[in-house]
Image 1 (cartoon, helix red, strand yellow):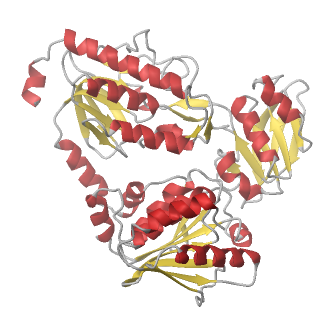
Image 2 (tube, helix red, strand yellow):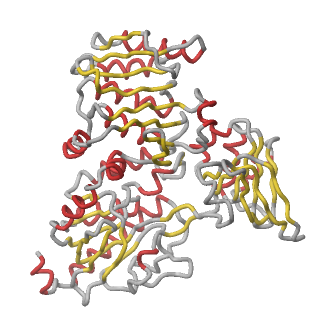
Length: 529
């Protein structure tokens, strides 16, 4: 199962085990069970602290439990093979079960251990899903630190009948005590915030104790990370308040245009951004959703940002970098069938539509790339484009047109996603040249029609927004209000690219520096400090 490189890496990691662990497998007579046995035997052979048995009786076969030998009450179960993107998750499960400390704050571990109640998690992942490992690892951490939390992590391709029966049409998909709990990427802190009713109040109280910053960055994507590093290097007290650190980069698969790095992936780049920010005295406040901006009354005064949990932060300057999100179609059926056939991440959810018929809405680079990827997995792809021509790069168009299981509809306006009450069964579109309506029978609709800036919270702030909701900035990244700057995909800067966002974040930081050295703090700042 493991190649030479993986075997060597795993051997090095298993040398870090502090306590013996047990692998207990439940296997059938199928090929996947044979592969699971092979994997477990290979793992056990690499360390005398790992023992393996194959007498498990769990109904999901193949599956195996990882647990500490001295504390069998804390365990996590993998159903199917955790390879591909999940190999790291497997390694971490082995290490954590063996007593190697996780790289999370002790406060988080204490919060997990302090949860009351019984929690039975079942989570579905695909081996190509780049969003799934965060959820897999979060649930693994929780299960191995609280005996009343159990986690079964299920590779959907191995249990396709179960996936179909439970209408799982997007991953990661997480069930709690038999009911749908969440769909999409979540970290351990996000899961805890949903389970722990007092988490929001504690977070708000923690923010209330913070002194005003000289620079507060709102948003933790590439623009926000770059801005915070630049202002911290200038010696200013800097904070980042982010809904999720990494932003939309976390949802990006392959990145091939980040200059000097021929190829990387979004989650890897986000981790590198977080590590770089961690090299400086930057106060990172994650899971903070901004809801209101109250500008300073005069230059040099304090701006205030209020958050969803009731807390607020103040700062002499602000850098707004809240990014953007996928644009919705806005047609009947889209919301009703979201995660039941309507999807936004072809790389994550594509494997769930193997052999089926799907549509991709959008003829730009994202849409055409999605159609190409899906055509290698699904039975048939219909690409639907509103315009009279595709807007993607010609090399992508040529590749798409060379594929035999792809149809391209131009001048086609999507008007409705249809379903049977449980899942998608078709797409209705109007031919914009003839006015005639048509219906395509299919099982999935992937929406790829651009971005919407995350700026709704600024509409009553006095900051000028474009007709598209973007923050209007000048050549120095300054907004219409003194001391408030903005950068990245939430602004009017053309071309929404990671490398441009980083440059704009750096520019905004330098402009904030210039503002701070030219404007003395007024009395209210001195009193607040």
